[in-house]
Image 1 (cartoon, rainbow, N blue to C red):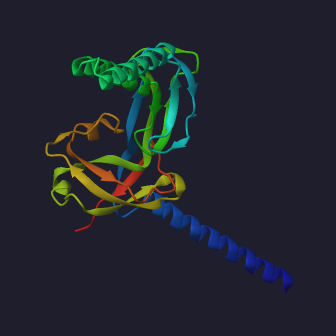
Image 2 (spheres, helix red, strand yellow):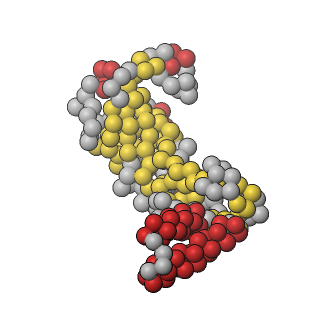
Image 3 (cartoon, rainbow, N blue to C red):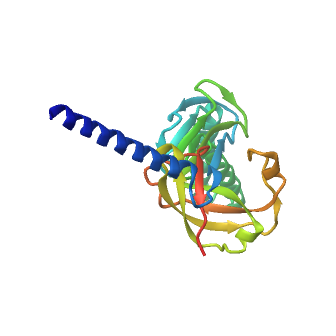
Length: 250
């Protein structure tokens, strides 16, 4: 009797496993709804040097989260600091002479302009974040010499992430900006993320070449931009990931 109970229990467990596996296979390979795949992107900001100098310090690493106006890179700027100090001393001296009546307004304006210019250049020696975001790439190290335009860092607001999906004309005619939809992340058992259509391109184009098959690449489609702002507070979605998008139903 005990052996029979064990056999029944084993059959029940095996049956449950097979049913679960069948459901999983159906969900993965036999979905009723067509899903459009897109690559996630975030708007990137490149920070570059605005003045020639050696780098004194880089205060962040790749992956660090930063706040708006946070100091990220400090340039040594020895010559700029000396010029700013001299310009300020000259301005203060001329201001005293002007108040004493021995310097003209024109002379005061000239030295003030030089002081303001030196202050601006001095401010360029501190590179600050223009946004709240995450450091994606760090290109330079302390001690390196940089010129104006040399890229220092790339950062992005990962929470404000989006993708383009490419939709054929019969389907795009049903879409409009502001529509809500769902995105699914395959790596997390198709976890759902709320998305919003924020742009539908006005002109058709050929499916981008990163689509897998040649036949699909030769179709005319419309790009539809889908934002996941507001549903990525945990920053699970990251640039470069593939997300599958289900379009709104009729």
